[in-house]
Every structure is written in structure tokens, then in C-alpha cells.
Length: 162
Image 1 (tube, rainbow, N blue to C red):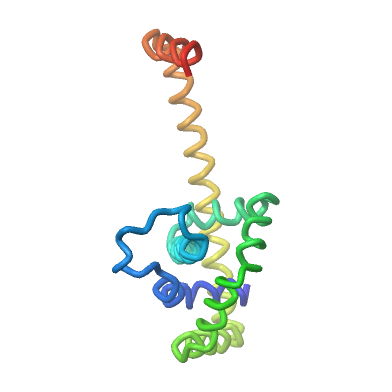
Image 2: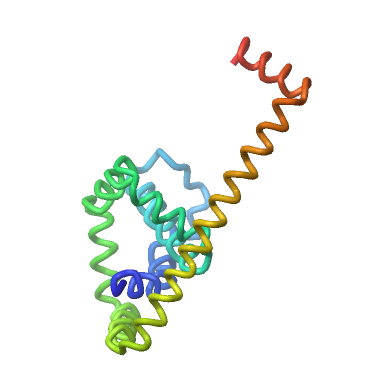
């Protein structure tokens, strides 16, 4: 819990620190591995920042963390020199250190820690419920589409000519 709290409290700064330069408008993913790594880091940190606010996204993040293939990719990224350099720069930053210290201090207070844990548990429950409802809605839409002759004709055509 302490790790998550510290991570969420510093994510905004990290997302800014990792963002691909705005002057680099001609960036195309796949052409420069170093820029690709910076972009991946930036998007990952922005996703974590958003997950700290969005219960459904938080629940999805925790589900994704159970995916061995995804975690292998994350491990590979964290072993890259670009990621290590960014992390070193981030952890040496004064604002990051202050945020991390504030988060650690907040977690030392049992009442504050309990509040944060309760908030996290509530967000996870709400997010998991939203994911389940979304899955039900998607299945209902799929079943309804299967009853539509036009949709089935289009599906049959796509199977003949992918």
C-alpha cells in the first residue's frame, strides 16, 4: 500500500518528466528505439496517473498486472538503459523527493494510512463492478448484433474476404 500511495502521489511529476518533447512533432513510433522507450514510459506513467483517479482503470491496471506477458514486457522496459536513466533523474529531482517524503510521512499515520487503504479498496470494488457491467453490456450488444441479418451478412462477407 505504501508503494502505491507513493507512486500515485508522484505520478504527475513523472508523467511530465517522461513526456516526449513537444518540439518532436515528426516522431513516428518504431523508427527510434530510444524515443519509443521514452514514449512508452510517458504513456505508462500517464496511465498510472489516470488510474489513480478512475476506479475502472485502476481495476483494469491490477488485472493487467496479473498478465505474465505484460509483466515480462514491463520488466524488459525497466531493464532498459533509457528507463534506468529516467528513473535515476526522477528520483534525484527535488520535487520527487519532497513528494515521496510527504507520501511516506502520511503513511506513518495509522489513521491516514487506513483512509488511503479504504479509498483504494473502495475504488477497486467500484472499478471491478464497472468492468463486470461493461462486459455484460458488451455481451448483450454482441448477442443483439447476431440477431441482425445485415450484421451477420457483413460478418460472413468479412470471413470470405478478410
